[in-house]
Amino acid sequence: MAQGDRGLILGIETSCDETAAAVVRRGREILSNVIASQIAVHFPYGGVVPELASREHLRNILPVVRAALAEAGVGYEDIDAVAVTEGPGLAGALLVGISFAKSLALSLGKPLIAVNHLEGHIHAVLLPPQGIGTLEEASRGTTLALVVSGGHTHLYLAEFRKDAEKDGAQSGAWTYRNVGRTVDDAAGEAFDKVAKLLGLGYPGGPWIDALAPHGNPEAAPFTFAQIKAKVHRKGEPGALDPREAIYFSFSGIKTAMLRYIQMHEMRAQIEARRRALVELTEPKPADAVALCDKRTLDLIASFQRSVVDDLRRKTFRAAERFGAERVMVSGGVAANRELRARFTAEARERHLPIAFPSMALSTDNAAMIAAAAWPKLVAGEFAAEGLTAEPSLRLGR
Image 1: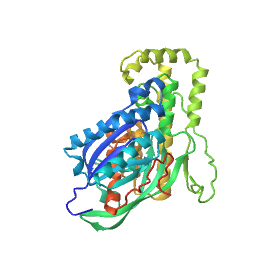
Image 2: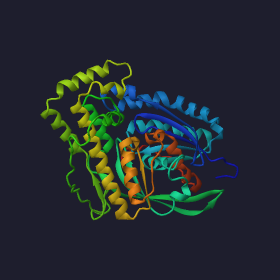
Image 3: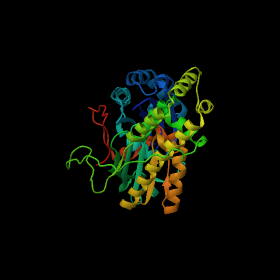
Image 4: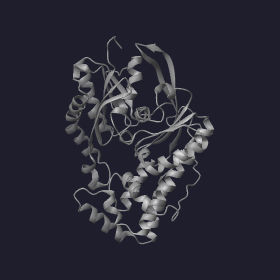
């Protein structure tokens, strides 16, 4: 970085169904964070339609970037770099953000920085106000990071390897080692699919979270079988060390929910609930409480408790196995209130520091992309001219 640069990074995120832009100073200070949601577009389909997502990104990206700059009180010429999500995500959606960011960086003569979406989620925890207060604190020792969202359920060992002080900023790089993942559905995907099965709204996570406290989580307990993951050859993409890896699986509980619904003949009331919610202009989880009987509410509470407990057990097992000094939980499912409460209680019992992003930064946003780009800007790690979308991009080794 040249002397006098302010460390302003414009972040752009279009990996799925949120068009987002943010301006962040030196990886820590959020000057703006603007998000255009597509929930209303995808709600009738009960999930993200890739073609519609790409179209909405094309429509929203310029207004969102302009709004982010205006909210931050800066102009295009004031930013020091443009950061954009490279992957993973939907190919068409990613390409909209990358094409825009490349054109903008080229026209301004500014560096372009490519960011892994998963790394962005991890860096969301470092943005204030959080339990892990500073980059310096987070960079001491090993951190176990759980990234749990609609598309991902991964465990990473994260470390910050310092180099030197450079223009008043700590130079170095984050390294990541993947030590756990799902072998099928991600946890957030299970929330979405179960909500759809029960005739609830999209995205399913907030609906399940809001309705679960009205039910008995012990009424229909679900169990998770021991997972025997496929053994990969060393060096093969996706390979984890089978002697130490932690595996998740959420397709089974989705199937168990479907069988429960069939066994108890709940189809008629589910369809009635679905029709009632569709007729509302802006349906909210609170509208569904009166549309759910006790059995349905108990089922929702039991499903959420089972998923949260599986995530909790395996995350803290990994923390113990790898000697992690702290735990960080990020991604859309990190906004779940029961997850936060049960993870926090477990961490307290173990005397292990734990941190989550703020609720606003748990779901996809561009502030996390700009924050993750800061160490790369300091180190001079810029994207190549041929940067393109990487829908299956991996993080770490």
